[in-house]
Length: 269
Image (cartoon, rainbow, N blue to C red):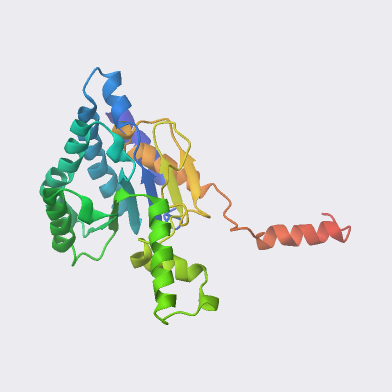
């Protein structure tokens, strides 16, 4: 315990508090494998993973992250065994019942994106109650992608934009990147809609139909740590990795550009 405390303090000291990503998105993967490694049913991994969500929410909020988007249930996850899906649909009920008071205490606002109206009635109620109960919070946004898929997101955005054109509200020539961003499910986040950092746990290195438009220039970090084992120190390491990246968004930083000009003129130091 003492060593873990020391490690956490060391990591906190290394973090640049002025370079915390505004928006962090996480593909929470590995609950089932965590349970199988311990000869437990898969739902035990999901239950433990729910506790990890609570931990990382508090850590991210304390660090100054403005939006934390968590991939909780994809449109493809309905293909899983019925019992597992039923358990997953019940998790938001228990999660929000237990955690909303802490979220309010920490000034965290809940948002949910996805086809919420297709979820079971009790799940919808838990989600909508949590959104309502935290609506006055002004701190970090805890944004759950629930029954979400990025291709669906993009398709629905195209449909909305097409309808705006058909209704005479939008000129085809005026459609630009911002138009598309505004009509995606993350549009409510405004300038924070695109993640600065995308993390995937469990060793898998794919995007799995998550925020495909929004992560065009996100930094991607993959870790072998299974989601139930993802803790404060691992999250801090992911932030440190982000801080070591050279984000240029397709351009060249001024200092490097100046160096290239000197070389092109035959001038060296």
